[in-house]
Length: 96
Image (tube, rainbow, N blue to C red; front, side, top):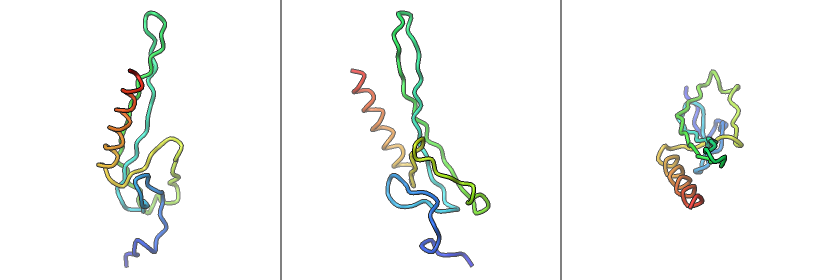
């Protein structure tokens, strides 16, 4: 018998609201800063955002530890992409 979702403990809290449970697909996003130096010695930082589809099965439930410092957790891909476009727009405005 499959247990009801509200009787199970969530494995993570999503940034777009709600909880993430075992045997559900969810999405994580992180920001990397790519640093390069120009020929004049100026430091240029280019942000790169990555969205990854993840799945935690019941077998690996005990080993999963959410890392809220490095990753943002989303229940839907549309919310992750929306946040990514907001951050990219904000980064462009800061470079002007």
